[in-house]
Length: 174
Length: 174
DNA sequence: CTGACTGTACCGTCCGGTCGGTACAGTAAA
DNA sequence: TTTACTGTACCGACCGGACGGTACAGTCAG
Image (cartoon, rainbow over the protein chains, first blue to last red):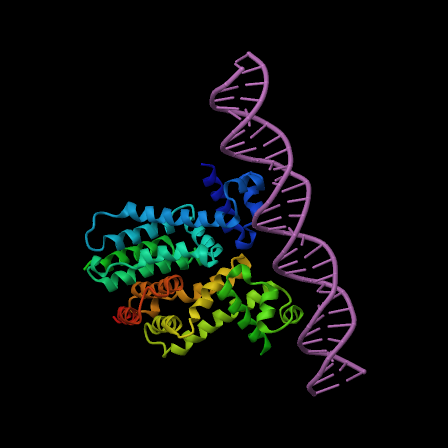
């Protein structure tokens, strides 16, 4: 779909050159389209950013879903950890898109979908984990890891990440 | 010092109205100063943002320092947790400043000090904790908590935060 | 008098958004 | 088959406003 290609272009511009470089002209240029062509699909810049936010949230939701195995205790927290490591260790630096997009969505209206997603991801029912507090810690650590890796991708090597993942999953058992 | 007052004004504008509202005119206005007056102290907008970033990092560094008690095993990780909860449970929503400022610093040059701070905060010597991996998890959870609270301040109540803090500190013992 | 500091008028650029127009594919009446 | 018409996709010139930054005259404490 053409809109997806335009969103891809917008993401590229965003994480390669930062928020202030995200102009309609730059996105159109990157997508090989005129500004008019871009505006035909996204009537305003806000609509464009909103669509980026929505897409990136949906992608992560789907990723979590793909790791869900039944509804045994801790299933969600495990899936959340798995999904996070998928994104963080994926070859295409997929996580970079996130920080770039969230930074672009500082206007309250645009940030709201992100806030809502955060509530869904971290506001879990205490009954779904054996040790709800430990599960909370694990999920928060995954969140924090994401944040840290976004800022300093080279800080942890593959070995450390692997060990970290094992420890997080272990904390969810019993 | 006058510069601090100007930085205060810039922060206010930033977290009350978002990144795009951070203009020289708005900051000057908020500080009760003319644009010329503002530019006398900060020659460019970039210098202003850079100073905001530097100050906020320095503040958190100082906060960590204030919680450091000697160099017993885990001293730093404990201090990091304490400092994080100080900021998150402080009455003046101090953490709001952070997310606002980091969002304003997406240009690589401006983000670099933040990246460097992240390396310092999370790239610790494995020898300084009894269980380095557990300490890593704890610090990352603190980082993640910050992120989550920034997006959804109402998600955790005081009781939950207290329990979480106790659990994080407990994970650092033995 | 001096120099640190302030206020204001102004400039050039950039950016979001508008708008009139083009190309083209489909369709259907005559 | 021709013709007229419609909808979709896209183009690019242009506008108005905002914004960063400059120039410069003025102020006032020491």
